[in-house]
Amino acid sequence: MRKKFIAVYALMAVLALGSTTLTSCVDDNESASVTAIRDAKAKQLTALANYQDVKAQNEKIIAEADAAIRNAEAKAKEIQNELSGLALEKQKATLETDIETAKLKAEEALLRQKASLEQAKASLIEAADAADNATKERINNLLEKADALMNGEWTRVWNENKQDYEWIYITYNSIYGKDGLNDRLLQKKADRVKADYELVDIKLQIAEAVRKEEKKLAVNEALLAEYQKYDNTDLDAAEKAYNEASQKLPALQKLYNEANDLYLTEVNEKVNPALNDIDKTELMLYINGDPNGYRVSAYISYEPREAETITINHDDGTAERYTPSYTQYQIVVNEEDLAAAVTNVDSNAKIAGQKLKDAEKAQADGLKDDAITLDGVTTYKELKTAVADAKKAFDKNPTEENKLAWVNADEKLTEYEKSLQKKVDDAQEKLDIANEEVEIINEINKLLTGDAFKAYTAKYEAYIAAVDAAAETLIAAMKAEHNLQVQNELADGLKSVVDAHTDWLALINQTEQAINDNKKNIATMTADDGQTTEAIKQQYIAILDQEIARLEKEIAIKQAQYDGYMTQIEALINGDTGTEEPETPEEGGEETPAE
Image 1 (cartoon, helix red, strand yellow):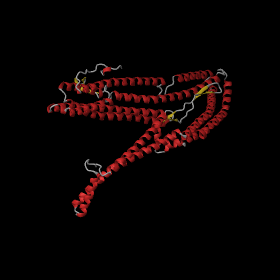
Image 2 (cartoon, rainbow, N blue to C red):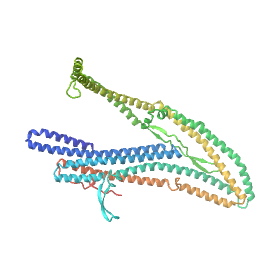
Image 3 (cartoon, rainbow, N blue to C red):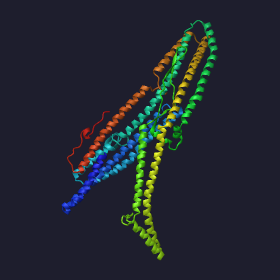
Image 4 (cartoon, one colour):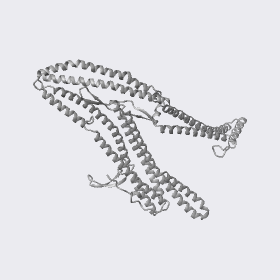
Protein backbone atom coordinates (compact mmCIF):
# COMPACT_ATOMS: atom_id res chain seq x y z
CA MET A 1 0.00 0.00 0.00
CA ARG A 2 2.88 2.36 0.82
CA LYS A 3 4.32 1.74 -2.64
CA LYS A 4 1.00 2.75 -4.17
CA PHE A 5 0.94 5.99 -2.16
CA ILE A 6 4.53 6.76 -3.22
CA ALA A 7 3.56 6.15 -6.84
CA VAL A 8 0.57 8.49 -6.50
CA TYR A 9 2.59 11.31 -4.97
CA ALA A 10 5.45 10.76 -7.44
CA LEU A 11 2.95 11.05 -10.28
CA MET A 12 1.57 14.26 -8.76
CA ALA A 13 5.11 15.68 -8.64
CA VAL A 14 5.69 14.80 -12.28
CA LEU A 15 2.37 16.41 -13.24
CA ALA A 16 3.21 19.57 -11.34
CA LEU A 17 6.66 19.69 -12.94
CA GLY A 18 5.18 19.13 -16.37
CA SER A 19 2.80 22.06 -16.02
CA THR A 20 5.76 24.44 -15.71
CA THR A 21 8.16 22.98 -18.25
CA LEU A 22 5.58 22.83 -21.06
CA THR A 23 4.65 26.51 -20.80
CA SER A 24 7.34 27.61 -23.20
CA CYS A 25 6.28 25.06 -25.87
CA VAL A 26 2.62 26.00 -26.38
CA ASP A 27 0.54 29.13 -26.59
CA ASP A 28 -1.06 30.66 -23.50
CA ASN A 29 -4.56 29.26 -24.05
CA GLU A 30 -3.27 25.67 -24.51
CA SER A 31 -0.93 26.03 -21.55
CA ALA A 32 -3.79 27.08 -19.29
CA SER A 33 -5.86 24.13 -20.49
CA VAL A 34 -3.06 21.65 -19.91
CA THR A 35 -2.36 23.14 -16.49
CA ALA A 36 -6.05 22.91 -15.53
CA ILE A 37 -6.24 19.27 -16.56
CA ARG A 38 -3.11 18.40 -14.69
CA ASP A 39 -4.19 20.33 -11.61
CA ALA A 40 -7.50 18.45 -11.70
CA LYS A 41 -5.66 15.12 -11.95
CA ALA A 42 -3.39 16.09 -9.09
CA LYS A 43 -6.44 17.00 -7.00
CA GLN A 44 -8.08 13.67 -7.86
CA LEU A 45 -4.95 11.68 -7.02
CA THR A 46 -4.56 13.54 -3.72
CA ALA A 47 -8.19 12.80 -2.84
CA LEU A 48 -7.67 9.14 -3.75
CA ALA A 49 -4.57 8.94 -1.57
CA ASN A 50 -6.50 10.48 1.35
CA TYR A 51 -9.31 7.96 0.90
CA GLN A 52 -6.78 5.12 0.92
CA ASP A 53 -5.09 6.58 3.99
CA VAL A 54 -8.33 6.27 5.98
CA LYS A 55 -8.40 2.58 5.11
CA ALA A 56 -4.79 2.26 6.27
CA GLN A 57 -5.81 3.79 9.61
CA ASN A 58 -8.61 1.21 9.87
CA GLU A 59 -6.07 -1.56 9.42
CA LYS A 60 -3.91 -0.02 12.16
CA ILE A 61 -6.90 0.09 14.54
CA ILE A 62 -7.68 -3.58 13.91
CA ALA A 63 -4.00 -4.51 14.34
CA GLU A 64 -3.84 -2.70 17.70
CA ALA A 65 -6.99 -4.45 18.93
CA ASP A 66 -5.60 -7.79 17.78
CA ALA A 67 -2.35 -7.09 19.64
CA ALA A 68 -4.29 -6.23 22.81
CA ILE A 69 -6.14 -9.54 22.62
CA ARG A 70 -2.85 -11.42 22.11
CA ASN A 71 -1.43 -9.59 25.13
CA ALA A 72 -4.39 -10.76 27.20
CA GLU A 73 -3.68 -14.29 25.96
CA ALA A 74 -0.08 -14.00 27.19
CA LYS A 75 -1.31 -12.85 30.60
CA ALA A 76 -3.71 -15.80 30.70
CA LYS A 77 -0.84 -18.23 30.23
CA GLU A 78 1.00 -16.64 33.16
CA ILE A 79 -1.85 -17.22 35.65
CA GLN A 80 -3.11 -20.63 34.54
CA ASN A 81 -1.59 -22.60 37.44
CA GLU A 82 -0.29 -19.74 39.57
CA LEU A 83 -3.53 -18.71 41.24
CA SER A 84 -6.55 -20.47 42.62
CA GLY A 85 -9.99 -19.76 43.99
CA LEU A 86 -11.13 -16.16 44.29
CA ALA A 87 -7.76 -14.74 43.18
CA LEU A 88 -7.93 -16.74 39.94
CA GLU A 89 -11.52 -15.67 39.26
CA LYS A 90 -10.60 -12.01 39.78
CA GLN A 91 -7.62 -12.31 37.45
CA LYS A 92 -9.71 -14.04 34.78
CA ALA A 93 -12.34 -11.31 35.08
CA THR A 94 -9.59 -8.72 34.55
CA LEU A 95 -8.41 -10.53 31.44
CA GLU A 96 -11.91 -10.65 30.00
CA THR A 97 -12.27 -6.93 30.74
CA ASP A 98 -8.99 -6.29 28.87
CA ILE A 99 -10.31 -8.20 25.87
CA GLU A 100 -13.69 -6.44 25.87
CA THR A 101 -11.96 -3.05 26.27
CA ALA A 102 -9.76 -3.77 23.25
CA LYS A 103 -12.83 -4.65 21.16
CA LEU A 104 -14.83 -1.60 22.29
CA LYS A 105 -11.85 0.68 21.67
CA ALA A 106 -11.58 -0.68 18.13
CA GLU A 107 -15.32 -0.23 17.52
CA GLU A 108 -15.24 3.39 18.76
CA ALA A 109 -12.13 4.19 16.72
CA LEU A 110 -13.66 2.68 13.57
CA LEU A 111 -16.82 4.70 14.15
CA ARG A 112 -14.76 7.89 14.28
CA GLN A 113 -12.89 6.77 11.19
CA LYS A 114 -16.19 6.42 9.34
CA ALA A 115 -16.69 10.19 9.49
CA SER A 116 -13.18 10.69 8.10
CA LEU A 117 -13.95 8.19 5.37
CA GLU A 118 -17.14 10.01 4.37
CA GLN A 119 -15.20 13.28 4.17
CA ALA A 120 -12.45 11.67 2.08
CA LYS A 121 -15.05 10.07 -0.19
CA ALA A 122 -16.81 13.41 -0.66
CA SER A 123 -13.49 15.01 -1.60
CA LEU A 124 -12.82 12.27 -4.12
CA ILE A 125 -16.29 12.67 -5.66
CA GLU A 126 -15.80 16.43 -5.83
CA ALA A 127 -12.40 15.97 -7.47
CA ALA A 128 -13.93 13.55 -9.97
CA ASP A 129 -16.32 16.29 -11.13
CA ALA A 130 -13.45 17.70 -13.18
CA ALA A 131 -13.46 14.57 -15.36
CA ASP A 132 -15.81 13.99 -18.27
CA ASN A 133 -19.25 12.65 -17.41
CA ALA A 134 -18.59 9.06 -18.50
CA THR A 135 -15.35 8.85 -16.50
CA LYS A 136 -16.95 10.56 -13.52
CA GLU A 137 -19.81 8.05 -13.55
CA ARG A 138 -17.39 5.11 -13.67
CA ILE A 139 -15.33 6.57 -10.80
CA ASN A 140 -18.46 7.08 -8.71
CA ASN A 141 -19.69 3.54 -9.42
CA LEU A 142 -16.35 2.03 -8.48
CA LEU A 143 -16.14 4.18 -5.37
CA GLU A 144 -19.62 3.05 -4.32
CA LYS A 145 -18.59 -0.59 -4.69
CA ALA A 146 -15.37 -0.01 -2.77
CA ASP A 147 -17.25 1.77 0.01
CA ALA A 148 -19.74 -1.11 0.23
CA LEU A 149 -16.86 -3.52 0.72
CA MET A 150 -15.28 -1.34 3.37
CA ASN A 151 -18.27 -0.13 5.42
CA GLY A 152 -21.55 -1.52 4.06
CA GLU A 153 -24.29 -0.51 1.64
CA TRP A 154 -27.93 0.55 1.50
CA THR A 155 -30.15 -2.36 0.46
CA ARG A 156 -33.89 -2.42 -0.33
CA VAL A 157 -35.60 -5.21 1.64
CA TRP A 158 -39.18 -6.30 2.23
CA ASN A 159 -40.63 -5.45 5.66
CA GLU A 160 -43.23 -8.07 6.54
CA ASN A 161 -44.82 -5.95 9.29
CA LYS A 162 -45.15 -2.85 7.12
CA GLN A 163 -45.97 -4.86 4.01
CA ASP A 164 -43.67 -2.61 2.06
CA TYR A 165 -40.06 -2.24 0.95
CA GLU A 166 -37.62 -0.16 2.99
CA TRP A 167 -33.98 0.83 2.74
CA ILE A 168 -31.60 -0.66 5.32
CA TYR A 169 -27.86 -0.01 5.71
CA ILE A 170 -26.31 -3.48 5.87
CA THR A 171 -22.78 -3.75 7.31
CA TYR A 172 -22.60 -7.47 8.14
CA ASN A 173 -20.56 -8.49 5.09
CA SER A 174 -18.34 -5.37 5.00
CA ILE A 175 -14.71 -5.36 6.09
CA TYR A 176 -14.88 -2.59 8.71
CA GLY A 177 -18.60 -1.90 9.27
CA LYS A 178 -20.40 -2.46 12.57
CA ASP A 179 -20.70 -6.23 13.23
CA GLY A 180 -18.80 -6.68 9.97
CA LEU A 181 -16.05 -9.14 9.13
CA ASN A 182 -13.31 -7.57 11.24
CA ASP A 183 -15.67 -7.05 14.19
CA ARG A 184 -16.61 -10.72 14.07
CA LEU A 185 -13.00 -11.79 13.57
CA LEU A 186 -11.92 -9.88 16.68
CA GLN A 187 -14.79 -11.46 18.62
CA LYS A 188 -13.83 -14.96 17.47
CA LYS A 189 -10.19 -14.34 18.39
CA ALA A 190 -11.29 -13.09 21.80
CA ASP A 191 -13.45 -16.20 22.23
CA ARG A 192 -10.46 -18.33 21.20
CA VAL A 193 -8.25 -16.78 23.89
CA LYS A 194 -10.93 -17.28 26.55
CA ALA A 195 -11.47 -20.85 25.38
CA ASP A 196 -7.75 -21.54 25.82
CA TYR A 197 -7.64 -20.62 29.48
CA GLU A 198 -11.07 -22.12 30.09
CA LEU A 199 -9.64 -25.38 28.71
CA VAL A 200 -6.84 -25.20 31.26
CA ASP A 201 -9.42 -24.64 34.00
CA ILE A 202 -11.40 -27.62 32.78
CA LYS A 203 -8.31 -29.83 32.72
CA LEU A 204 -7.43 -28.80 36.28
CA GLN A 205 -11.01 -29.28 37.50
CA ILE A 206 -11.26 -32.70 35.89
CA ALA A 207 -7.83 -33.76 37.15
CA GLU A 208 -8.72 -32.78 40.71
CA ALA A 209 -12.12 -34.46 40.49
CA VAL A 210 -10.51 -37.64 39.11
CA ARG A 211 -7.94 -37.60 41.93
CA LYS A 212 -10.71 -37.38 44.53
CA GLU A 213 -12.69 -40.13 42.83
CA GLU A 214 -9.62 -42.37 42.66
CA LYS A 215 -9.15 -41.77 46.38
CA LYS A 216 -12.74 -42.93 47.00
CA LEU A 217 -12.17 -45.92 44.72
CA ALA A 218 -9.10 -46.98 46.69
CA VAL A 219 -11.07 -46.80 49.96
CA ASN A 220 -14.00 -48.78 48.55
CA GLU A 221 -11.75 -51.47 47.10
CA ALA A 222 -10.02 -51.85 50.47
CA LEU A 223 -13.41 -52.07 52.22
CA LEU A 224 -14.67 -54.70 49.78
CA ALA A 225 -11.64 -56.85 50.51
CA GLU A 226 -12.39 -56.64 54.25
CA TYR A 227 -16.15 -57.34 53.90
CA GLN A 228 -15.53 -60.41 51.75
CA LYS A 229 -13.70 -62.05 54.67
CA TYR A 230 -17.02 -62.72 56.43
CA ASP A 231 -20.24 -64.59 55.60
CA ASN A 232 -23.77 -63.36 56.12
CA THR A 233 -24.54 -65.45 59.22
CA ASP A 234 -21.47 -64.80 61.36
CA LEU A 235 -22.73 -61.93 63.58
CA ASP A 236 -20.36 -62.85 66.40
CA ALA A 237 -17.46 -62.50 64.03
CA ALA A 238 -18.86 -59.14 62.95
CA GLU A 239 -18.95 -57.87 66.52
CA LYS A 240 -15.43 -59.11 67.11
CA ALA A 241 -14.23 -57.50 63.89
CA TYR A 242 -15.93 -54.23 64.83
CA ASN A 243 -14.18 -54.15 68.23
CA GLU A 244 -10.81 -54.86 66.61
CA ALA A 245 -11.38 -52.19 63.95
CA SER A 246 -12.40 -49.62 66.56
CA GLN A 247 -9.34 -50.36 68.69
CA LYS A 248 -7.03 -49.65 65.71
CA LEU A 249 -8.50 -46.18 65.06
CA PRO A 250 -6.59 -44.18 67.75
CA ALA A 251 -3.21 -45.49 66.56
CA LEU A 252 -4.06 -44.77 62.90
CA GLN A 253 -5.29 -41.29 63.83
CA LYS A 254 -2.02 -40.63 65.64
CA LEU A 255 0.03 -41.81 62.63
CA TYR A 256 -1.95 -39.54 60.34
CA ASN A 257 -1.60 -36.53 62.65
CA GLU A 258 2.15 -37.05 62.91
CA ALA A 259 2.56 -37.47 59.14
CA ASN A 260 0.41 -34.42 58.39
CA ASP A 261 2.29 -32.31 60.95
CA LEU A 262 5.55 -33.36 59.36
CA TYR A 263 4.27 -32.25 55.96
CA LEU A 264 3.04 -28.89 57.29
CA THR A 265 6.40 -28.38 59.01
CA GLU A 266 8.16 -29.08 55.70
CA VAL A 267 5.97 -26.49 53.97
CA ASN A 268 6.38 -23.83 56.67
CA GLU A 269 10.09 -24.34 57.24
CA LYS A 270 11.32 -25.08 53.70
CA VAL A 271 8.80 -24.39 50.92
CA ASN A 272 7.55 -21.00 52.13
CA PRO A 273 11.06 -19.73 52.98
CA ALA A 274 12.22 -20.88 49.52
CA LEU A 275 9.41 -18.81 47.99
CA ASN A 276 10.41 -15.82 50.12
CA ASP A 277 14.03 -16.25 49.03
CA ILE A 278 12.93 -15.89 45.38
CA ASP A 279 11.15 -12.62 46.21
CA LYS A 280 14.30 -11.34 47.94
CA THR A 281 16.56 -11.82 44.92
CA GLU A 282 17.94 -8.72 43.24
CA LEU A 283 15.91 -9.45 40.11
CA MET A 284 12.55 -9.81 41.90
CA LEU A 285 13.21 -6.78 44.13
CA TYR A 286 13.80 -4.73 40.99
CA ILE A 287 10.70 -6.09 39.24
CA ASN A 288 8.43 -5.57 42.26
CA GLY A 289 9.97 -2.46 43.81
CA ASP A 290 11.81 -0.31 41.27
CA PRO A 291 9.83 2.38 39.36
CA ASN A 292 11.13 0.81 36.14
CA GLY A 293 10.52 -2.75 37.29
CA TYR A 294 7.40 -3.10 35.16
CA ARG A 295 9.54 -2.72 32.03
CA VAL A 296 11.24 -6.06 32.62
CA SER A 297 8.01 -7.78 31.54
CA ALA A 298 8.72 -6.75 27.92
CA TYR A 299 11.71 -9.11 27.83
CA ILE A 300 10.57 -12.09 29.90
CA SER A 301 7.81 -14.65 30.13
CA TYR A 302 6.59 -16.71 33.09
CA GLU A 303 6.68 -20.39 32.25
CA PRO A 304 5.18 -23.21 34.36
CA ARG A 305 7.46 -25.99 35.59
CA GLU A 306 5.86 -29.32 34.74
CA ALA A 307 5.75 -31.93 37.50
CA GLU A 308 5.58 -35.70 37.07
CA THR A 309 2.49 -37.49 38.34
CA ILE A 310 3.28 -39.92 41.16
CA THR A 311 1.43 -43.19 41.74
CA ILE A 312 0.86 -43.82 45.47
CA ASN A 313 0.69 -47.53 46.24
CA HIS A 314 -1.12 -48.15 49.53
CA ASP A 315 -0.36 -50.97 51.96
CA ASP A 316 -3.67 -52.70 51.14
CA GLY A 317 -2.80 -53.00 47.43
CA THR A 318 -4.92 -50.07 46.20
CA ALA A 319 -3.46 -47.00 44.52
CA GLU A 320 -4.12 -43.31 43.76
CA ARG A 321 -2.25 -40.57 41.89
CA TYR A 322 -0.75 -37.26 42.95
CA THR A 323 0.88 -34.46 40.93
CA PRO A 324 3.01 -31.90 42.81
CA SER A 325 2.08 -28.29 42.11
CA TYR A 326 4.73 -25.62 41.54
CA THR A 327 2.65 -22.49 42.11
CA GLN A 328 5.57 -20.17 41.32
CA TYR A 329 6.22 -19.80 37.57
CA GLN A 330 9.79 -19.54 36.32
CA ILE A 331 11.10 -16.43 34.55
CA VAL A 332 12.42 -17.13 31.03
CA VAL A 333 14.33 -14.39 29.20
CA ASN A 334 13.55 -13.47 25.60
CA GLU A 335 17.19 -12.96 24.66
CA GLU A 336 16.45 -11.82 21.10
CA ASP A 337 14.08 -9.02 22.16
CA LEU A 338 16.44 -7.96 24.95
CA ALA A 339 19.46 -7.75 22.61
CA ALA A 340 17.40 -5.77 20.08
CA ALA A 341 16.35 -3.31 22.82
CA VAL A 342 19.98 -2.78 23.88
CA THR A 343 21.01 -2.06 20.27
CA ASN A 344 18.00 0.20 19.70
CA VAL A 345 18.50 2.47 22.73
CA ASP A 346 22.22 2.72 22.01
CA SER A 347 21.50 3.79 18.41
CA ASN A 348 18.86 6.28 19.58
CA ALA A 349 21.32 7.84 22.02
CA LYS A 350 23.92 8.24 19.27
CA ILE A 351 21.34 9.84 16.98
CA ALA A 352 20.21 12.18 19.77
CA GLY A 353 23.83 13.11 20.46
CA GLN A 354 24.37 13.98 16.81
CA LYS A 355 21.18 16.07 16.76
CA LEU A 356 22.46 18.03 19.75
CA LYS A 357 25.73 18.70 17.92
CA ASP A 358 23.73 19.83 14.88
CA ALA A 359 21.60 22.14 17.03
CA GLU A 360 24.68 23.61 18.70
CA LYS A 361 26.30 24.20 15.31
CA ALA A 362 23.08 25.76 14.02
CA GLN A 363 23.08 28.03 17.07
CA ALA A 364 26.70 29.03 16.50
CA ASP A 365 26.02 29.70 12.81
CA GLY A 366 22.85 31.57 13.72
CA LEU A 367 24.79 33.94 15.98
CA LYS A 368 27.06 35.01 13.15
CA ASP A 369 26.52 38.52 11.80
CA ASP A 370 25.43 37.37 8.34
CA ALA A 371 22.92 34.75 9.62
CA ILE A 372 19.36 35.25 8.36
CA THR A 373 16.84 35.52 11.21
CA LEU A 374 13.22 34.46 11.68
CA ASP A 375 11.66 36.79 9.10
CA GLY A 376 13.85 35.32 6.34
CA VAL A 377 15.24 38.73 5.43
CA THR A 378 16.95 40.47 8.36
CA THR A 379 20.47 39.40 9.41
CA TYR A 380 21.55 38.83 13.00
CA LYS A 381 23.86 41.83 12.77
CA GLU A 382 20.97 44.01 11.62
CA LEU A 383 18.89 42.86 14.62
CA LYS A 384 21.70 43.81 17.03
CA THR A 385 22.26 47.12 15.25
CA ALA A 386 18.55 47.87 15.42
CA VAL A 387 18.59 47.33 19.20
CA ALA A 388 21.68 49.51 19.63
CA ASP A 389 20.24 52.27 17.44
CA ALA A 390 16.89 52.17 19.25
CA LYS A 391 18.65 52.39 22.63
CA LYS A 392 20.70 55.38 21.49
CA ALA A 393 17.55 57.07 20.21
CA PHE A 394 15.84 56.49 23.56
CA ASP A 395 18.87 57.68 25.55
CA LYS A 396 18.97 60.82 23.44
CA ASN A 397 15.23 61.42 23.50
CA PRO A 398 13.45 59.23 26.15
CA THR A 399 9.91 59.28 24.78
CA GLU A 400 7.27 56.57 24.93
CA GLU A 401 7.56 56.13 21.19
CA ASN A 402 11.35 55.65 21.37
CA LYS A 403 10.94 53.30 24.35
CA LEU A 404 8.44 51.15 22.42
CA ALA A 405 10.76 51.02 19.41
CA TRP A 406 13.64 49.93 21.65
CA VAL A 407 11.49 47.27 23.39
CA ASN A 408 10.23 45.90 20.05
CA ALA A 409 13.72 45.72 18.59
CA ASP A 410 15.02 43.98 21.73
CA GLU A 411 12.10 41.50 21.70
CA LYS A 412 12.88 40.52 18.09
CA LEU A 413 16.52 39.94 18.96
CA THR A 414 15.62 38.00 22.10
CA GLU A 415 13.01 35.91 20.28
CA TYR A 416 15.53 34.94 17.63
CA GLU A 417 18.25 34.05 20.16
CA LYS A 418 15.73 32.07 22.23
CA SER A 419 14.62 30.14 19.13
CA LEU A 420 18.21 29.03 18.59
CA GLN A 421 18.61 28.14 22.26
CA LYS A 422 15.29 26.27 22.32
CA LYS A 423 16.49 23.92 19.58
CA VAL A 424 19.60 23.23 21.61
CA ASP A 425 17.56 22.73 24.80
CA ASP A 426 15.11 20.42 23.03
CA ALA A 427 17.96 18.38 21.57
CA GLN A 428 19.63 18.23 24.99
CA GLU A 429 16.38 17.06 26.60
CA LYS A 430 15.98 14.32 23.99
CA LEU A 431 19.59 13.26 24.52
CA ASP A 432 19.03 13.12 28.29
CA ILE A 433 15.94 10.96 27.77
CA ALA A 434 17.84 8.71 25.34
CA ASN A 435 20.74 8.35 27.78
CA GLU A 436 18.31 7.55 30.58
CA GLU A 437 16.79 4.84 28.37
CA VAL A 438 20.29 3.44 27.80
CA GLU A 439 20.85 3.28 31.56
CA ILE A 440 17.48 1.59 32.20
CA ILE A 441 17.81 -1.00 29.43
CA ASN A 442 21.45 -1.70 30.30
CA GLU A 443 20.44 -2.24 33.93
CA ILE A 444 17.64 -4.62 32.86
CA ASN A 445 20.04 -6.38 30.51
CA LYS A 446 22.55 -6.82 33.33
CA LEU A 447 19.85 -8.18 35.63
CA LEU A 448 18.59 -10.67 33.06
CA THR A 449 21.94 -11.89 31.73
CA GLY A 450 24.37 -11.56 34.63
CA ASP A 451 24.90 -12.74 38.18
CA ALA A 452 21.51 -11.47 39.36
CA PHE A 453 19.69 -13.85 37.01
CA LYS A 454 21.98 -16.73 38.00
CA ALA A 455 21.14 -16.04 41.66
CA TYR A 456 17.42 -15.95 40.83
CA THR A 457 17.67 -19.25 38.95
CA ALA A 458 19.49 -20.89 41.86
CA LYS A 459 16.78 -19.76 44.30
CA TYR A 460 14.06 -20.98 41.94
CA GLU A 461 15.67 -24.42 41.68
CA ALA A 462 15.94 -24.50 45.47
CA TYR A 463 12.20 -23.83 45.63
CA ILE A 464 11.51 -26.71 43.20
CA ALA A 465 13.67 -29.00 45.33
CA ALA A 466 11.79 -27.91 48.48
CA VAL A 467 8.42 -28.69 46.86
CA ASP A 468 9.69 -32.10 45.73
CA ALA A 469 10.99 -32.86 49.22
CA ALA A 470 7.70 -31.78 50.75
CA ALA A 471 5.86 -34.04 48.29
CA GLU A 472 7.51 -37.06 49.91
CA THR A 473 6.13 -36.11 53.33
CA LEU A 474 2.75 -35.34 51.77
CA ILE A 475 2.62 -38.79 50.19
CA ALA A 476 3.32 -40.34 53.61
CA ALA A 477 0.47 -38.25 55.04
CA MET A 478 -1.84 -39.33 52.19
CA LYS A 479 -1.05 -43.00 52.88
CA ALA A 480 -1.78 -42.53 56.58
CA GLU A 481 -5.02 -40.71 55.74
CA HIS A 482 -6.07 -43.55 53.42
CA ASN A 483 -5.47 -46.16 56.15
CA LEU A 484 -7.43 -44.08 58.68
CA GLN A 485 -10.35 -43.51 56.29
CA VAL A 486 -10.59 -47.21 55.36
CA GLN A 487 -10.53 -48.20 59.02
CA ASN A 488 -13.17 -45.61 59.93
CA GLU A 489 -15.55 -46.74 57.20
CA LEU A 490 -14.85 -50.38 57.99
CA ALA A 491 -15.76 -49.77 61.62
CA ASP A 492 -18.94 -47.98 60.56
CA GLY A 493 -19.91 -50.87 58.25
CA LEU A 494 -19.24 -53.46 60.90
CA LYS A 495 -21.27 -51.46 63.40
CA SER A 496 -24.23 -51.51 60.99
CA VAL A 497 -24.05 -55.30 60.82
CA VAL A 498 -23.79 -55.62 64.59
CA ASP A 499 -26.78 -53.31 65.09
CA ALA A 500 -28.73 -55.26 62.40
CA HIS A 501 -29.12 -52.19 60.24
CA THR A 502 -27.71 -54.18 57.34
CA ASP A 503 -25.94 -57.46 56.59
CA TRP A 504 -22.74 -58.60 54.89
CA LEU A 505 -24.29 -59.17 51.50
CA ALA A 506 -25.87 -55.73 51.51
CA LEU A 507 -22.56 -54.13 52.47
CA ILE A 508 -20.74 -56.06 49.75
CA ASN A 509 -23.36 -55.12 47.14
CA GLN A 510 -23.30 -51.44 48.18
CA THR A 511 -19.51 -51.34 48.03
CA GLU A 512 -19.36 -53.07 44.65
CA GLN A 513 -21.91 -50.58 43.33
CA ALA A 514 -19.84 -47.72 44.77
CA ILE A 515 -16.72 -49.10 43.05
CA ASN A 516 -18.58 -49.29 39.73
CA ASP A 517 -19.77 -45.69 40.22
CA ASN A 518 -16.23 -44.57 41.02
CA LYS A 519 -14.88 -46.13 37.83
CA LYS A 520 -17.70 -44.73 35.69
CA ASN A 521 -17.20 -41.25 37.15
CA ILE A 522 -13.48 -41.39 36.43
CA ALA A 523 -14.11 -42.42 32.83
CA THR A 524 -16.75 -39.73 32.20
CA MET A 525 -15.51 -36.97 34.47
CA THR A 526 -16.70 -33.45 33.65
CA ALA A 527 -15.76 -30.00 34.86
CA ASP A 528 -17.35 -28.33 37.86
CA ASP A 529 -20.45 -27.43 35.82
CA GLY A 530 -21.27 -31.14 35.53
CA GLN A 531 -21.47 -30.96 31.73
CA THR A 532 -18.26 -29.82 30.06
CA THR A 533 -15.59 -32.36 29.19
CA GLU A 534 -12.16 -31.69 27.78
CA ALA A 535 -13.25 -33.21 24.45
CA ILE A 536 -16.25 -30.86 24.22
CA LYS A 537 -14.06 -27.80 24.85
CA GLN A 538 -11.47 -29.04 22.33
CA GLN A 539 -14.22 -29.43 19.75
CA TYR A 540 -15.41 -25.88 20.45
CA ILE A 541 -11.84 -24.56 19.99
CA ALA A 542 -11.56 -26.42 16.67
CA ILE A 543 -14.81 -24.79 15.47
CA LEU A 544 -13.48 -21.37 16.48
CA ASP A 545 -10.25 -22.01 14.54
CA GLN A 546 -12.29 -22.91 11.45
CA GLU A 547 -14.44 -19.78 11.79
CA ILE A 548 -11.37 -17.55 12.25
CA ALA A 549 -9.79 -19.05 9.11
CA ARG A 550 -13.03 -18.55 7.15
CA LEU A 551 -13.35 -14.91 8.19
CA GLU A 552 -9.70 -14.22 7.37
CA LYS A 553 -10.18 -15.76 3.94
CA GLU A 554 -13.34 -13.71 3.29
CA ILE A 555 -11.56 -10.52 4.38
CA ALA A 556 -8.65 -11.33 2.05
CA ILE A 557 -11.07 -11.88 -0.88
CA LYS A 558 -12.86 -8.59 -0.25
CA GLN A 559 -9.55 -6.82 0.27
CA ALA A 560 -8.47 -8.01 -3.19
CA GLN A 561 -11.75 -6.70 -4.63
CA TYR A 562 -11.28 -3.36 -2.90
CA ASP A 563 -7.69 -3.02 -4.17
CA GLY A 564 -8.95 -3.81 -7.66
CA TYR A 565 -11.54 -1.01 -7.52
CA MET A 566 -8.93 1.47 -6.25
CA THR A 567 -6.53 0.49 -9.05
CA GLN A 568 -9.29 1.14 -11.62
CA ILE A 569 -10.12 4.54 -10.10
CA GLU A 570 -6.46 5.55 -10.25
CA ALA A 571 -6.24 4.35 -13.86
CA LEU A 572 -9.34 6.38 -14.79
CA ILE A 573 -7.87 9.50 -13.20
CA ASN A 574 -4.68 8.93 -15.21
CA GLY A 575 -6.70 8.71 -18.43
CA ASP A 576 -6.81 4.92 -18.92
CA THR A 577 -10.48 4.17 -19.66
CA GLY A 578 -9.95 0.63 -20.93
CA THR A 579 -9.72 -1.10 -17.55
CA GLU A 580 -12.37 -3.76 -17.03
CA GLU A 581 -14.07 -4.33 -13.68
CA PRO A 582 -12.75 -7.46 -11.92
CA GLU A 583 -14.83 -10.58 -12.19
CA THR A 584 -12.81 -13.20 -10.29
CA PRO A 585 -11.16 -13.17 -6.86
CA GLU A 586 -7.75 -13.29 -8.56
CA GLU A 587 -8.67 -10.14 -10.49
CA GLY A 588 -10.28 -8.54 -7.48
CA GLY A 589 -13.81 -9.81 -8.22
CA GLU A 590 -16.43 -11.12 -5.83
CA GLU A 591 -16.61 -14.63 -4.43
CA THR A 592 -19.12 -16.04 -2.02
CA PRO A 593 -17.10 -17.84 0.65
CA ALA A 594 -18.11 -21.30 1.74
CA GLU A 595 -20.02 -21.37 4.97
